[in-house]
Length: 300
Image (cartoon, rainbow, N blue to C red; front, side):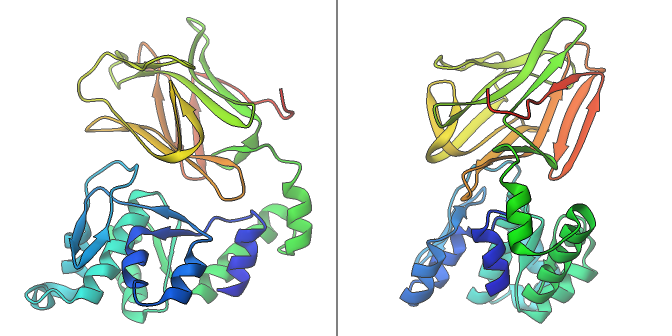
């Protein structure tokens, strides 16, 4: 993990720890101390017997750890519920719910399951540290011409502190040009990222309004907003390190604070009033259909 950690500390990747790691390290103080370097992510359910094995996080969707458990280990093992195997699946479940690209492990059985089980393969790459590092170096060489840490760090310092898809800027505005409606505005102000938004459902109906310093205005009972931790991500009257806004059927917005000091929007789905125009982000992929995106390359 050493080289991966170097990339993390340089702000080029983000290593996250699941809430389950704390349970595993209860009797391993040195590993627990080292894990403090990483931001914790949670899931959509709490599970615990002797203390908590998993905690709630700002995520959308329901936990599928038991389905993963049966697919990886089979119903026979399911009869006796091996603690270690349960925790393995809780790790994977939380990584998927938090839109991680990779789950890094040395467990060969998990790596093989990630290759063979379609429900896992479609959502995340389960890889060894060596393979993860190899893929990352290949990505950096293809997209930046080098995998050298110092050279990449030099390129990265000129980027903005707000990441959406594979783009960095000092803020973003998504505008419906037909009615000049700002669906999303995100900008840095006094060290905080201010998020203002008018969220519409797939039918174009307004379900939520958020403006700086004001209470959120809900127009729909099935729209949920969740935030965890105290941090620079500001929505309405409160600030968090991670937020998500979702209904039962769609994630409208998911964003998190990174240890590098940047803000990452890892999932976004915004709809216009007539629902024909849409803006979406799924990890590093961005799609803009009939809407305008304004992204300043310099601090405002």
